[in-house]
Length: 87
Figure 1 (cartoon, helix red, strand yellow):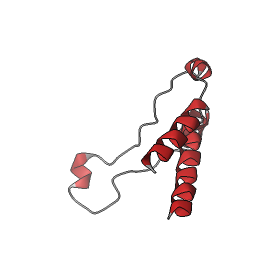
Figure 2: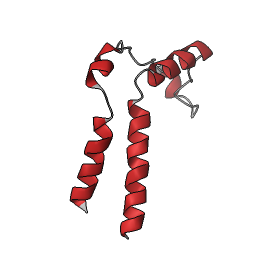
Figure 3: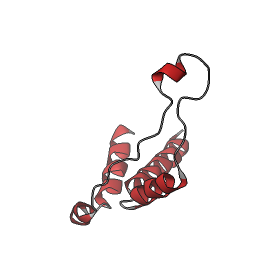
């Protein structure tokens, strides 16, 4: 079973064209605004303040540039299906 999972993973990774991926410009993650330490120590308010609309849009565009996460999600779904069938 482990060998089959390894083969499935290898097949999923083969879908990534490394040359095309290298052309995608690298972008930094958006920094999540947080409460100052002094303010955190005085209450139980959420530390992460959330992204602005502009930051959220930039983060989404960054994510959609390469598709690696989507490929990983596909691999994980195929793995779950494989394990269900093997059980």
